[in-house]
Amino acid sequence: MTYKVTEEGNVSTVFLNGEIDMDVTETAKEVILPLVDAGKEVHLNLKDVSYMDSSGISVLIESHQKALEKNTKVIVKEVSKSVLKVIMMAKLEQILNLE
Amino acid sequence: MNLSESKDFPVSTASLKEVRVFSREVFEKINLPQEQKDELVLAIAEAAQNIVKHGYKGVEQTTDRMEIKISLNDTQLEIGFYDKGKPVVPGNVQHRKLDDIKPGGLGTFFIKQIMDGAVFKKDQQGWVNHLVLTKKI
Image 1 (cartoon, each protein chain N blue to C red):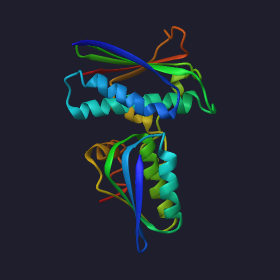
Image 2: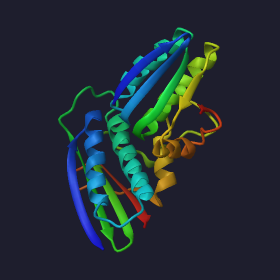
Image 3: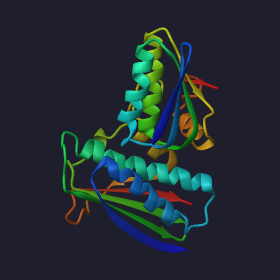
Image 4: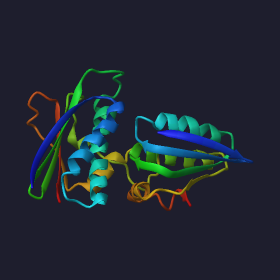
């Protein structure tokens, strides 16, 4: 997995790329959670994420829940078809902010 | 179609990618919709992850290996997982309730969603655990 972060005002956009499994979730959390902690609105762009397992789903849940605590939000954007299927299998499409 | 392929991997999160590569290579030989192949790869990866995450919980590093065997007998797909981690008590293998939204506990749920059966067998043959996932395809 690789990533890129862009900033515009109070919005941080994290572009994740590749496959997200248990081997890389700590890295993903280290990128995303400090932004949420800082009160940023975080956009997670997943258009280049080709695979995500339950560990990756946990990162999405943890980010979403931390954002609620911090009165901000995490928006999951441009979800690839394969990742959307996993999100739907976990019945999270109504819980996460998907765009 | 009949097929049987197996491969062993170091017990490590770094092996999960190799597990997916192996699984994809095997499923390339089977005529299935890509969506179903992706689901099966996810189920296999989740089961392998459970070995690393739960079977070796608290173990920093190990030289142990785990083996995955994918067999197809006509339309019956069987995927075996062998490991030497902590003995699994099948009754303790449960996923979290879906409406209890929190990180973790989804891997076993995904496996149950995708596969027809998941059974720990007692024919370990030198291994500690032998999980068998089955699906009619």
